[in-house]
Image (cartoon, rainbow, N blue to C red; front, side, top):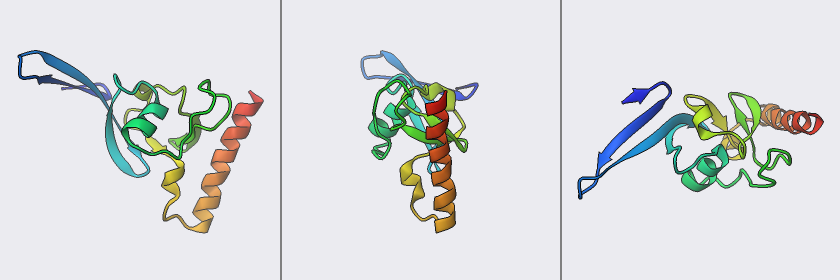
Length: 123
């Protein structure tokens, strides 16, 4: 059943118990994915642990250092402090999303990442 931007799926295990999965659907590097928000509460955890994209790094865990920066709907975001529940139906681009881009596209994307680092350092 869909509730807003998330899907809750109930599954029955052999002994008759049921479990619920809080699946969040979003697009990452052009690919639609679903992750369980109960297992991966932050976007960084979902990216690294569930999706196995390790280019996005854990740094300070407080959204200050910029190691975890991704583009969220084209704007820089700190994935270590971004709840995965807040990104339903949004587009995420990680450093791995640069594969196959032209030089001009790479330069434009890198500028957005750099602007994000500058933005967070001046707040």
